[in-house]
Image 1 (spheres, rainbow, N blue to C red):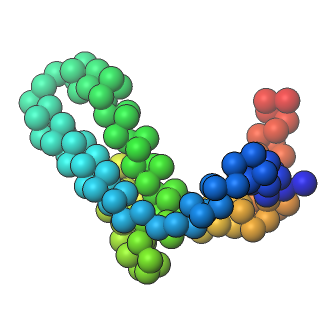
Image 2: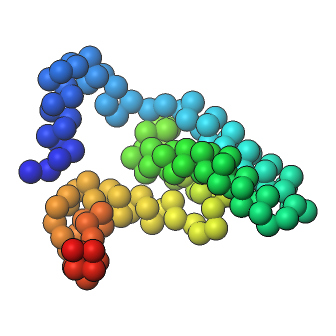
Length: 138
């Protein structure tokens, strides 16, 4: 069975008040995006003349937190959960993606929505490992 639906039913049975939150938009998320992008860009500017080990330490101990937050925000934008209009969510996802090296927000949205629509279908669910990956790690 599809685990997202099963888990949703379990949560709603235990906590029926959660139902009103499903699909609700939260434009305040964009402030987190703005803050995290600003923090990462600001750190990059402040560390521009520092030795490599200081850059790595700052990325590891500080930058990982806003970077992960931005990925979560890209996920929310992929589900159109930040703004009411899809194009605004697309722009929010692209903006959240700015500090990373590779532009992934739009392709993530395409693959992630496909994952929800075809969960467990090996040829269509991008979250499943490919056959060679599964064999490689047993």
